Image 1: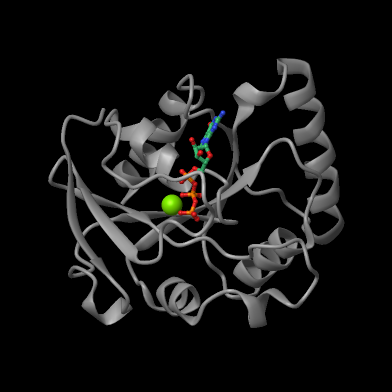
Image 2: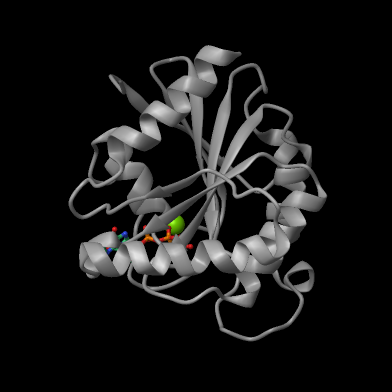
Length: 197
Ligand code: GTP
Ligand code: MG
């Protein structure tokens, strides 16, 4: 259960992040996919994380402390346009530095807009995570924008695409920041990891 959520610090340098002395969970994905909105939905506060209709709103590494005991992190988005330039060239050094060096990052939630077909930039990013042994889960966002059956269809199609490159699928969650879908599941997922430490 999330009883308390507070903003801690924003910065541009992984070395200036809070001491890595508590479990940490971060949210990543293309710009505008709904990272900041999802954090607000999970903590039950309207504007703890800054949300915008204009892509590129979150430009810093933002730490929030939950129940005085673990961190949620809002990250900037990667990839503004649907062009197939290598993701490594595209996404900011800030993000890769953070992901590769943050020792208490127990799970990176990779957000994918459930409405769209698999995009190269996301698939390349997920592949890069695998190559670097980063623990991650996929969260499909904006489920309220489609009917339930369509959501299931899209996730099944996406899973098939992933299975072409992955033997085993990562954990897959579905969310809507608008109506709270997935809130319990994502919080339970995090609590299970916390309890297993
Ligand atoms: P950047 O910080 O720019 O990378 O974007 P972000 O991924 O943090 O997205 P943000 O949470 O700012 O949301 C972008 C837009 O999508 C806003 O207009 C949100 O209201 C909208 N949005 C986010 N999540 C949902 C959702 O679950 N359902 C619907 N319908 N809209 C959403
Ligand atoms: Mg944001």
